[in-house]
Image (cartoon, rainbow, N blue to C red):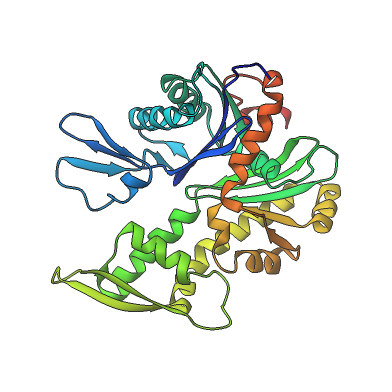
Length: 345
C-alpha cells in the first residue's frame, strides 16, 4: 500500500450509499437522497438530512433519489452527492490525493449504464474507477469462500434490484438481475393502503410498515401497526391499524417472483455446482432480504437451506473494500458482463 493511498470501495445503492476506506472500514453510510434548491440548483442537503425532507419540502426545494432500480437516473445529482460524500471520507486525513474507487454494479447492467457510473465517479473526483458485480461483492463481504471450485449462491436483495448469482473460482458462473426488490414492496404497500382503506401514505411510512410488520411468509402471530396518512377523498389526516396478515397478502406476489428467479438461476446452473449449493446453502444479503420470512420462503421453494448473512446491509460495501486488495490487477472501465457472457455462451 502506498503511503498516501486513498482507495475507496463504494456500494452505490438505490436507497443507501456506503463508502469503505482502505484501512479504516466503512466510514460513510448515508441514504442516497439529495435535496436541491430548484431556483439556484444548489445542493442543500445530502444523506439522512435530505431523506428527512422527502415529501416535506417547500415549493422551491426538491428531495430526490438520483438512483433508480440500481442504476443512475440523474447524472448531475449523483455527481453532486458523491462529491459531498467523498469530502466526508477525506476529512480525517491531511493529504488526500484523488481516490481510486471500486464501485459495484448490478449483474444485469448494460454498457451504457456502466459508463454512466464511471463518468459520475470521475466527475465527482475519482482518479480511476473499477467495477465489480454486486453479487460477487456481496459474497466477498459475507465471508463466503469463492476462491475454490466449490459453488456458492448469493441472493442480494437491495432496494432497486435483486441479484441472484452462483459463484466459483473467484467469478460468477450464472447470474440474473431482477428489478423487483425492497422499493417494489414499499410501492405495493402504498398502493394497497390507498385502494383498500382510501388513505394516501408516504414512501417513508410505507417502508416503516414493511420493516415493522411486513412478511413474505405467514407469521405465527398476527402483529399490528398504527399508520397516519391523508384521506384520499377529504384530504384530512386519518389513522388506521394495519395487520401483518394483510401485508403478507400484498407482498406474497413480488416475493414469489424473487423465488421464481432463484429457481430459474438454479435451472441454468451445472449439476455439479447445484450439488455444491445444496450442501453449502444459499446466502441472503442486502437490506430487502431482512423482511420477515424471506429465508423461510426461499428454503421452502428451493429445498435448500437459506441463511441471512451477518450485517446483510453492509455485505456489498465490505466486499468492495476487500476487493481493494487486488485493485492493481483489476481492469479499468466497463466490464460489460452480459456481453462477455454472450460471447462465452
